[in-house]
Length: 235
Image (tube, rainbow, N blue to C red; front, side, top):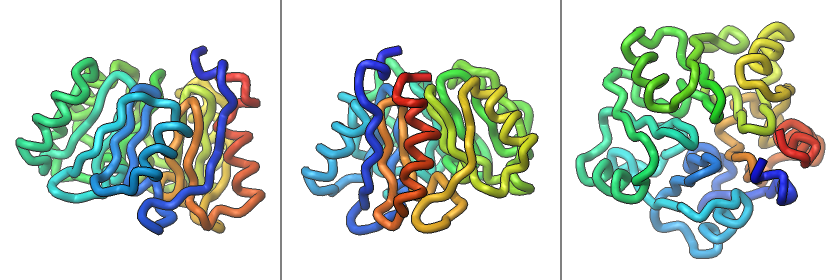
């Protein structure tokens, strides 16, 4: 795997002083979406830690909460129907080799409802079948409906890459095993930002590295490194 050639880095990081980095950033192995008006140093850190060349600064419906509003993997990007025409055109122009689909659903917080790596995806259990089909076709992976720990906002409870996954402590043992089987990577439980179970809010990662909120503790960092670094040998 390409990511095996470099050391997996986990870095504590804030976005404009906010430790909820995953609320603002969407990352895959191929591209990263960032909100506009970040400091040049912040953009450089994101590019270096996540090891991507394609970094696109954008808003969705004039909002900066990209990690909440979009979802996807290296193959595709899912956008809410609230996106403006100008934003859509700009993303199409910047991500020419990525499938882009607008999800026609009343549920607009796609980042909270979909989690994917380049092998599989799990989604909000109440999505209609035609939406699941659009997601499957766009991301190029098998899609599974499920909840985690009795909660349907699966995208906020799990971060998964081609190396591994970190899921909230509320996930049952059977759910952890199911997730590992679906995504074909080891999955372990953990928290971010001093005990927060909504993993995605405080963590953004791909197969090269991870950015985690400044409030994250040493033991949490060690858990993230173990979960997503894959022993630093790829996954």
